[in-house]
Image (cartoon, rainbow, N blue to C red; front, side, top):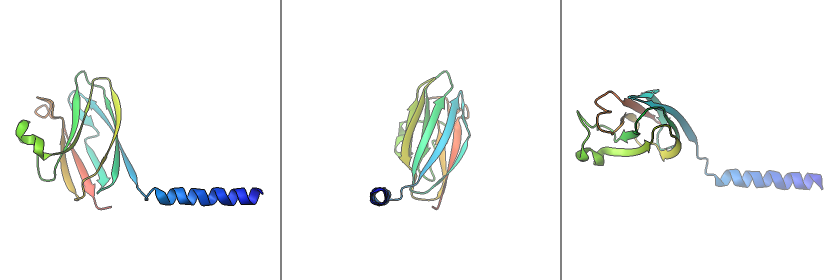
Length: 133
């Protein structure tokens, strides 16, 4: 009886693992302060699910905004930059937040910044390096 139960349990686990689709997750842990990201460079595999664990130790709200490949906000962020944002999350002062997104399909260096007025200008920028899986 124990052997049959063990066999059924093993088969069940195999079925469940097959149903997961083999999705790999990469985790990025980041601390936001006034006015920087720590660390300020992240390497992730293309097209994979990424978990971003953020902590805002600053006194003001911050954003983690990834721009599309080959784009930046230039000297100052404005409404004209919105179409260039690949993905972003906002984190309130003193808040920790865990979110997921899918990394861009194309390998390359992606510009990351905080879009809150004045933060980009103060140097709150980073780089997301996307590599082939």
